[in-house]
Image (cartoon, rainbow, N blue to C red; front, side, top):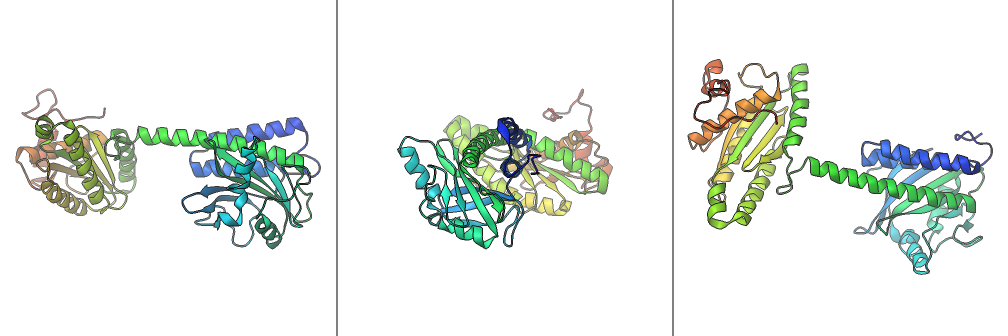
Length: 397
């Protein structure tokens, strides 16, 4: 009995294989990350082909190597489920680059093939020899105590992307032509799943990324800040928010044009990214227009202030614009309770407003001038119905 519940050496019947194809597609679709998707595909293919081991590898053209992304099943010495850098020169396995394309040129479709520890291969034609150069696979089978393998090219966007590899232990029934045909189908379904994963990853990236600067956007900040405040309420993790207003952007747009203004935004975004990297795990983002922010989770408030001070100094040296106004609110300072992200934003906004009004060359920090009587805190807590002469502070949008 196999782990598919089938009797004999392979999953039996059209219905059984159809269910296996559906299962592979469903498990890839249910994965949350590309890594999980790869693992789900490899494991589903291993079960579907009644293999003892399976792997998915990607052809890295720029490196000329076949890199293993995931191994599943019975792992031998030197094999890890998620290897850091298990890769092989493509010239040791040229079929991925040469044999597949030659077959396409003849008007056919990429097709899986079978190889055995005895060096007998089948796949493209009944009884055909292994693809040129595949004796490296034969040696690998012998070295790892496996009797046969089936190799199926994974084709994505019309190009050879990589391969699906499924093996059986020595002494198990050898894969045959029917298995190769089925592996070809499984590789095709895997390719469709990879394409969907790529689209979802791109959609996620766009949903949380500012298109001009490549930094995070307001949505990314909202999610990260909510998570950070949960940690703060649970274990006291320090959460610091730096809100930045880029000075002089309107003047640049009006006098030099919006293209130059965009360059200023990109340049400042790069500068913010560089400074943010001084705080492990920090998130840097563009909130919109000329407003940016840095979210620090963990580092002490003084460390965040130091980085913000460095940001102000470097921004003042930019060839365009008029520097930056920075306001900081941190749970590491005496700012009172922070029950929500909205309050931390209002505090950082109020500090940024005072920095801008005073044309300060340094960041203004909430809570460092009188504790609860701090002017920034009083400004942030002023009733929105009767605001002083300042912009309306952002709440949660």
